[in-house]
Structures are given as C-alpha cells and as structure tokens.
Amino acid sequence: MPPRKPPKAEEPPAPPPTAETSVVRGFWTGNISFGLVSIPVTLISARRSGRASLRMLAPDGTQLRRRYFGAQEGVALENSDIVRGYEFEKDRFVVVTDEELEGVAPKLSQEIDLSRFVPLADIDPMRFEHGYFLIPSKRALKAYRLLAATMEERGRAGMATFVMRGKQYLVAIIARAGLLRAETLRFDDELRSIAELEIDKSAAVDAPAVEAFARRIEELRAASLDTRDLEDTHTQRLLELIEKKRNAGKDVVAAAVTPHEESVDAKIVDLMEYLKNSITGGDASAETPSRKRPRSAQHKAPTSRQPKKPRAPRTPRS
Amino acid sequence: MAVRAMWKGVLRVADASVPIKLYSAIQDHDIHFRLLHRTDLTPVTQAMVHPGTNEVVSHDKVQRGYQVSPGEIVLLKPEELDSLTPEESRDIALTRFVPVGAIDAQWYDRPYYLGPDQDAGAAYGALTAALERGKVEGLAHWVMRKKAYVGALRVHAGVLVLVSLRHTEEVVAIESLETPEGPALDKKELVMAQQLMAMLEEDFDPTAYRDEYRDQVMTLIDTKRRGQKPKLGLVKTKPRAGNLKAALAESLRTAQRKPREKLSASA
Image (cartoon, rainbow over all chains, first blue to last red; front, side, top):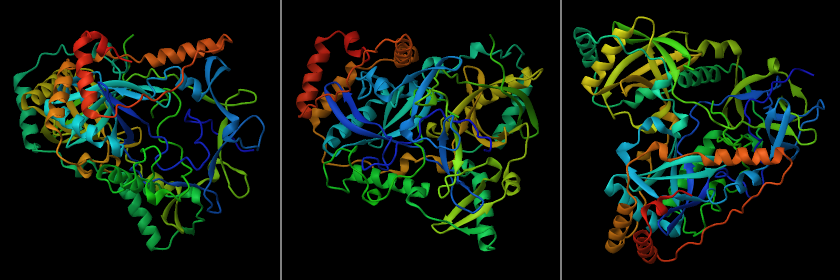
C-alpha cells in the first residue's frame, strides 16, 4: 500500500448525487428582511474558479477519483461512513452533525435581517471577504427592486449576520445598478490591528525623499485600473503550452468521459444562465430559486467536485 | 506577543526601493473539524483511486492532464509544470499608480500589512507620504511562495497595506449582469421604504457585530463532550407578508413604537 496523504481540507465529501442536488447545490437560500418585508433570495457566489483545472490521471490516462480511507487498508469509505469531529484533546474527538450545527442557531440560518443601514463609504473594503449576488424569487421581485432603489438612493449598505453551512457571516448588502449583492465581511477580531505589529514609524520623513517618490509615482500614473493587469498570466502560459502540445499531437490521450467528470466551465455557464433567467424573467415559472434549476443543467449529473465553500464551520481558507 | 512577519520583500518604484516585512492582516478564529471514520472515530486519510480497478494510485504515479475536448486529454509532465512556476524573487514591483478607489473592492482578496525592514524606515515613510499626497494606490506584482500575485498597495491608518487581487477570470463582474426590471415602483411605497430605512440608519461600528455562533458551536461541543444532550431548535421559515405596502406600513408603525435599541438588536 503506497503512503497516503492526510486530508488537506477539513470538510466532508460532497453528498452523493441525488435528484435534489443540482448545479445550484450549496448556495444559501433564505430571506432578507427589511422591517416586516421579507424577500426570498438565493445567494450565488460572484467568484469562480479561473485557473485551468488539471485532472489527476492514472498511468493509463483514466481520471482518478479522490476517496477516503479508514484504518482498514484498501477499503474506500462511503460518505455515510464519515462524520465530522472536533479534536478536544490529542486523538479525542466530539462528533458534531449538520443538524446540530443548524440547530444551535435556527433563526440565523434562515434570515438576513437588515436591522441597520450604514453609510456605504464607512465600510473599509479591507474587510470584504467574499462577494455573492442576491437573486430574488420571481414573486419578490417588486420588494427586491424597492429595497435596492432605496438603498442606492440613500447611499447605504444593510448590515446583518447570518449562518450559512455552519459558519456565521457578517454581511453588508450593497445595491448597485438595481442589483443587490452581499459582501461577507471579516469580523472585527479577524482583522489584526496595526498595534499588534511592530511597525516602526519613528523615522523622520524627509521632504526631498517624498518628492523623489512623488515624481516616480507621477511617471507611472494612470487614470483608471486596466483589468489587463489582472490577467492570470500563469494560466495563460499553461493554456498556451497545452495548445502547443495538442497541435503537435504530443501526449494527447483519449479521455473516458463519464457524467462525473464534467468540465468546470460548464458549471460556470450554467450559473450565468441561472442568474439571467431569475432576474430578467427568462423563465416564467414561479418556483422558488432553491427548487429551480437552469434548464440546461437539469439532466446532467452534478460534478464530482467538492463544494467550493467549506461545509464545516470555520474551516481554514487556503 | 508581537506578530511575526511571514515574508520579506523589497518594494520597487522605478529605481527606488523600500525593503519591507509582510504580515498577514487576518487572523483565524475558525473552529477546525476533522473528518472521522464513523465506526472508530479516527481521522480518515485520502487517496486517489482508479475508478475501474478501485486501486489506490500512489502520488508519484499520478499524472496531470488537461481536458481540451470531451474526448481528449493533454498530459503534462512534472518538468513542464515546473517550467511554468514563476521565478523566485523578493521584488514587489510597482508598475502603475491609480487614484484611490479606482481598484474596485470586488477584486480584493487578502490584505497584508507592510512594515519597514531594518533601516528602511525613512524610505517607508517617504513612500507612504507620497502615496497619501498623490491620493493614489499602486498596482504591485510579486512572487511569494512560488505563486505570482497582483496587489493593490494602499495607505491604511498611516501604514502600507498590500491587498492581493483576484484575476479577471475569477470574478463575475457586476457590469456583466442585467438589472432586474419591472413596472415603475409605487411612489408611496418608495416613500415608506425611505422612511423605514431612515429609522434604521446609523454609523458603521465594526465592533457592534460579534460571531456569537462560534461560541454556540463551542458550547455544543462542550455539552456533547460531557455526554449531555444538546438543546437544539428547529429551522423555521418566517411567514411572509403578502402585501408589500401593508408590510411597509406595519414596519413603520412598529419602528416608531419600539425604542431604537430593541429594533436593532440583532438576531
């Protein structure tokens, strides 16, 4: 038996595919409330995996699957064999279930209660962690638009905390161009204070030195951000290399396609489609977003990839 | 205890340089869980398995490949992948300066604080002052731990901060989405919504929000550890108000009746 690596991610494996899992699996569905007005929404990540994802293959070219193992060698575990545990002493664990994690804060799990509206300009973007778009259910579109218009008009962000997949989030709900988005913010104790660092600022600032930097800055000054500066050159070079090898017919092998091995790109396209349908009414159904699926994804099996967001509370972000 | 620097580098603006220490601005308070085998509660291990034979393929035998089409995979050798790894360097090259705010927060990933290294205090101070005076932030490129980064160099409370930025492909730009549309909004509802929001307005106080759930999860763990049964609630969906106008009117009445504190008390 070859040596195995310990699991890196402290998250349970993705649930086995069922009729209920879909492309939008893993996103939070609940209500934003503004006073007694309650707006059912689905949160969709504004982030997507941009890096070309490489597959792990067997020497014969077959795509490998990640499996978990217990003490018994050679016997892969099923998802139902795996539980989540907290190590309270070396090698001693308390098992915690999803139901228990939800059950300790049931109200927080369903509601983004906007009880404070703060000036948008007050929030330091250094606190921003992860962006989501809020997609309204069809029947709540009017209330959604009303809230967005009011927030934009007043330059305010709505603040709330809520629980998603075993972790409490602080969110700022921000309106722009009629769309609501949620930015999860770092809690105050998650951001180090400068006082904790030994930053020595005692040196006297020398006016000619400032002037010299100012001149250099002026030479490199631009009016706005050029997003070409944000291009992922590493991935571009990787894709170029791949294309070159493909054209040369070098190291090209036949891929055995199974429903589990769909490309990640397909998933992204589905998301955009989903977003568009929900907002512009491309689909006349009045189903709630949690049930609705983009048509293009309905007959596909979910990918074998694990959900992007950690399912266990407070798992590390790498 | 003072926080230790995680990396050292040199900020470069044209021919000028400022040696710096880099500190993570984030601290982790997450509760960490492990995956365990249900029967004996020992941590599981993971391995890559051949789906046909169900045999474990050892790490050194695993090949990397990229699927170029549904039927085709291009294999990549370790040395080919290594050749793409960016070259190690201590340089943080400032290639451009843009007005403060020109780099939208949707690109932000992780913030790092920078402090002067050794005797770079004067140069650090001068660069900070020049950025403040010009009301600009810099666009920086650097390689840290074998990974290439793009970042925004800004001044925060008199200290240099480097925020790593996401790549273009990693963000669904707000501009790419369509605005929800519908009939014109009801004027009266707009007025009521404005009034209600005005009653809920306050300044942003980051210390007003606490991760109480973390404490509750720790209590849950503690209760179970002592062999007691945890008290759990049921997840219930709040009934929705049917009529928007009525809900707004009732919210306004409630907000006016209740003292401010009570209404803003978070769930």
